[in-house]
Length: 135
Image (cartoon, rainbow, N blue to C red; front, top):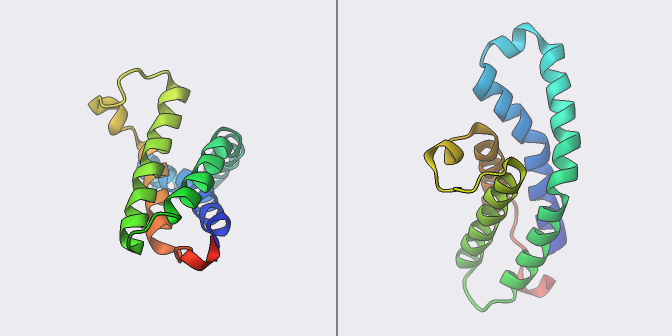
């Protein structure tokens, strides 16, 4: 797998699973009582999420490419990709919300960026990392 496939898997995972995870956290069991409302939210969240997070996917792709060129272990490169993805995630939500203090407790505990970050973290560590020969 190359860095393009790796980053697109991470992005698509976060794009589709973040709204579902958010619904489960925010609504809990009540989401199962009104599944139509939940599906409407997921569809809109995926649509707008794709629009707003597309630049982040491009930056993640180029960042992964650059990080993969470094001469260090795979786990160190994954950690660097994780750090880069974290900066991109919270930067995106800070820009979208107009939040100036991204280190405030309110911002850091907001469920939407947290869900997006958790699904990206899952992708970074779950998917096969591109090998040096695939650069």
